Amino acid sequence: MKITWLYAAVIGLISVAVVSCDKERTNVNTPTDNGPVIGGKGGLATLKITAMDDTLAIDSCKIYIKYNAVQMPIQFDDSAMCSFVDLKPPVVTFPGLKKGTYYLYAKGWNIYESTTVHGGMPYTIVHDTMATFTLQIPVQPIK
Image (cartoon, rainbow, N blue to C red; front, side, top):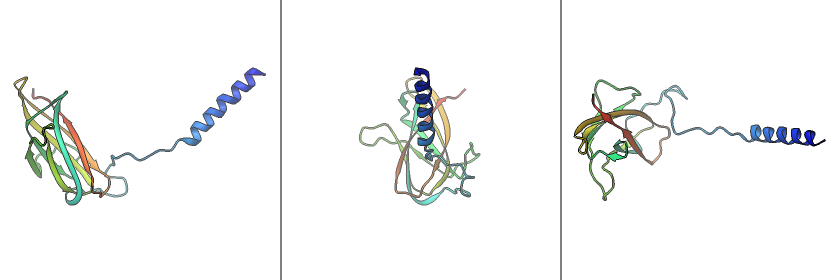
């Protein structure tokens, strides 16, 4: 009798878990979902980007951006030097971006290790919205 109640309880918990699952869409979208996603200037979104070497924000670096790219490109569409704002980690701001894909690349100088560092990553803005996305690009020493 006790085992029957145990089986019923387990089956009940599993069925509740299965029924209550609701997949939510993430903030990352691929270019093949719902047609092509074309990024570039002329939108409402803003990217605020900091280059990070482990836990150290790289203050002397340049951030490059390529529109409509998910891999390291040969050349970039825009770039800017990091700057300090309100005693916070140094950032580069790219305002006025549309929904779409972007490849971000950072290259700078780690003053504590006396090495040149670099790194990159793709990012997708999913919705045309007036939002600011704060990102950190992980960087490593150039070998």
